[in-house]
Amino acid sequence: MKILTAEQIKKVDVFTIQNQPISSIDLMEKAAEACSKWIMKHFDNQHNFHVFCGIGNNGGDGLAIARILKQKLYNVTVYVKKSDHYSEDFESNFELWHANKGQTITIESMVDLTLQPDENTIIIDAIFGYGLNRPVTGLESSIIQYLNSLNKKTISIDLPSGLFTNDNHKNTYDTIINADYTLTFEFPKLSLLLPDNEHKSGTIIILPIGLLPEGIAQQSTDVYFTTFEDCHRIYQPKTKFAHKGTNGHALLITGSLGKMGAAVLSSKACLKSGSGLVTALIPRSGNTVIQTANPEIMTLLSEEENIVSGNFAYHYDAVGIGPGIGKEQNTLALLKEVLMNCNKPLVIDADALNLLAEHTELQKTIPVNSIITPHPKELSRWIGSWKNDTEKIDKTLKLVDQLKIYVVLKGAYTCIFCPDGTLHFNSTGNPGMGTAGSGDVLTGIITGLLAQGYTAKESCILGVYLHGLAGDLASTEKSQESLIASDIIDFLGKGFLQFQPTF
Image (cartoon, rainbow, N blue to C red; front, side, top):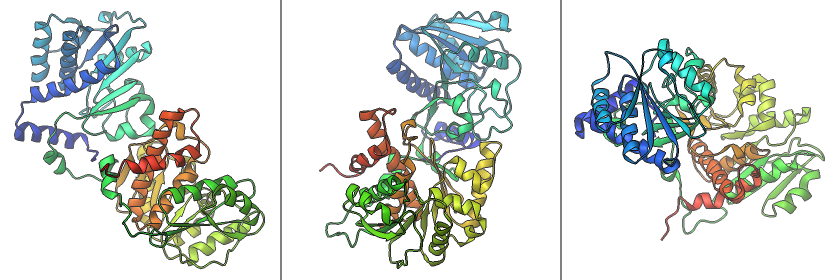
């Protein structure tokens, strides 16, 4: 799924209007119907809806939503700024609103805003949409700040008013609506997926409104949102005559005294991702732990408390290194050995990432197309701090271009930075996955996919999606609060089943 700029979205709108063909007012009606359907599904008519409409087409969306809700016997009040410059489609929907005897409050100054909220109050924000390109000022700024001060449940249409579509590093955040839900059309906007804007966008709901796929296809972009359909195309089912020798042999270099849980989790996730054989290079002291927990795992044994040079041949189809290995001096020597001798992409996580951050000269020896899986703090050790998400993205893209590696930046909407310059935001996962060991599981999944013959890019995209999907499936049964990393592994099978035919 493509993520487009404001200019590109406008082109798709125009293309749809010209080629479906459909009038702009009818396209607006489809958007309003989609929003109203979602609202009525989640809120009953005991609530009082206060719809704040701008003077352009986003305001027209708000008026159409208000009319549909009123026709369904919802209690709706519309608020409109007095203006001589309403858009044509706004004017058309305003007439329809009046024809339905809708209640309107015209705002010339803040004195006119006499809203008296109660426990049933819900704000619908339809002031500005995707076309905004400068910070909000004037009366609209005062209205937005007032609405935020009410601290009432707020639903924004397309974008929280005041938020730019892509880059907000020059925006003024106190003049952006604090949305609890953002009902956006066809595809997410980049700003909705970035941590800087989390407190503004709330829960994001993507609603199809019938924009023509041909119009979207004409727009080129380097930013994508991974969907089930994307991963279904990547997924490779097992062949009838497949066996453990053809399903890939993965090596995981993992664990140290007190951190053998990382070895257990990563190696089991690797097996559960479909790898035919998994060997774990671990400290001798952890052998009983891992062979008891995961009897299907083979082990190579190193020193008692942490791993040093294993003197092993690099005949494995994929190698993952880092979970729980520690940062001892002899562990650094092992990392150097792996980097010097492994001639295929590595999956690098956790302590291996931190060692490479401290010894930057080693980063140049990372095999091309390797995958690093940092969380934001680990990434900052590689690229330095950043003032905003735009700077973070620019610095990370520079890193992947220099080293020709993939960066899987973990978090909400986990983002994969690819050496071809593309970004892939993930659509699965939930806050319950922010728990110890979740990253170790992801390392195992990606390493397992890589061992089976998926490319590095495919392993990242499919691995991240499956990781989040399994977490979502687990949370529905166990709750986000009680979700632990091993639950993610337990639900990987149900995740894979979604890609397989039912006959």
